[in-house]
Amino acid sequence: TAGTGAGHYDQVNATGTYNIAATGTTLDAKLRGITGSATNTFVPTLGQSFEVVKANAVVGTFATYKAPTLAAGTRLDIGYTPNSVRLYVTPQSYSTVANANNATGAAKFLDDVLQVCDNPSALIGNSDLAQLYNALLPSTAQQLNAAMVSMSPAIYAENVQAALALQQRLHNTQTLSDVFKKGGVALKGLYQEADIDSDGNGIAAKRTINGVQLSLDSEPYSNDWQMGATLSVVTKADIESQDANIMAKGQDVAVAVRKKVNDWMLGAELNVGSYDFDVKRNVVVGNASFKTYQNDIKTSTQGAALTASYGAGSWSINSGVRYNAVQQDGFSEAGNGLLKLTVADVDENQVVAMLGGTWSQTWKKSMWDIAPKFALQAEQILSGDVAMVNAKLGSQMVKATAAEAGKTLLRATAGLNFINVDGLNIGVDASIEEADGLSSQAARLIMSKSFK
Image (cartoon, rainbow, N blue to C red; front, side, top):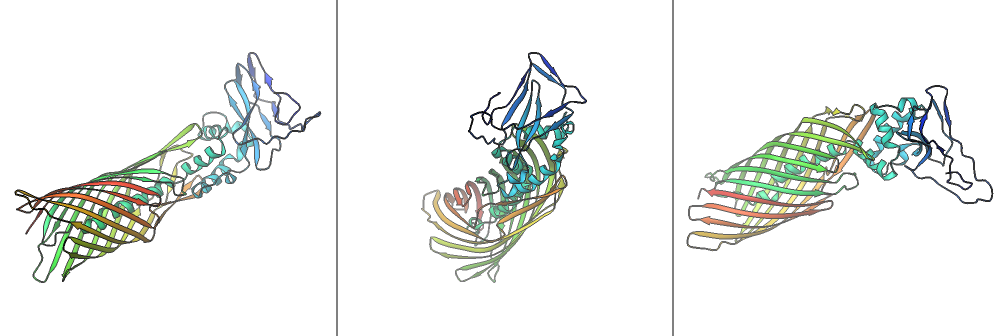
């Protein structure tokens, strides 16, 4: 509206249709300064707009737009709605808005593709660039930063971290206490829900795991050696964030060799896994959403562990050091042609130290013995606790990281087993896990049969 103080502006108000000729028309926005006795100051904020033309309908666009010099770090860009022409406060460079590590590469991408913003004709219509430009215009600084994070491969970094966490879940300290020292077979159903904080990377997510494990431990050989094998089938390993959904399934095979030395059981284990991930990603810019997707992302895992367990009465102490590795094949997304990512191969690994104690007591009954158990376990990530993904967005290289559990994870477990005289066991246990940036709950249903 017209006025003499800072923050006021002139407006053309048409009662009917406002027609703008396609050629020879110029919108020249000028800052006129404060006039008269006004002394106030005004600093526009990102996303703020000034309706310089208002009508029942606006038809056409100005052939030329001359932008004024605005406050340092900002500019005025032109935008059109069905019944108005507006000037929007936008950043001079999107790099000045990015306040998360995973947003900086996308900021450079926006600076590149929007170099044409002084040529409005390039930003009119329904092209991918025009739609992105019009979505960016009214966005606040917070919305812009969130948009740039969603443009980055942050969710794919979370995907790699999830593969590491899944591998650790299938072979963690908890599984060491399940070994049949005299041989046996077990079938376990697994379920876990984990809430993952953004941990500085801009992505908060929920991870859900469903699966079954079939394990077989041989009877000890005459020299106290023992073999073990486990097949894990993951029927669901989903990651859901505010703007993306990842669905995965796969399998893992592990073999172990163990040696009994007095009250100690020493062991070594190797495992390999293969998973397929399907991703649906929404790049959210203000109130607009741009979709990309990729199916059948191939991810493989390998691992090795050295373990040592000690049994004394109702107590067992389990410890080990584990190496986890993940390789994810590179790919190019489908979907929005402007915002789709070309993601490079990823090769990540970590080393985890494990220590846990389990107490179990058997109460004799006529038909079935009852055996409650309680356990406390800790896992310390010694190295490799951050997953990094590099990708190409337009002509810019963008990267993203994801850190899950920080350095230390604590797990508390309670369970109950029913055991008959033939060694058949039916049990259930539940556990909670806490770490910096992670909180999870898990449950297992176990059916097993010992050989002796």
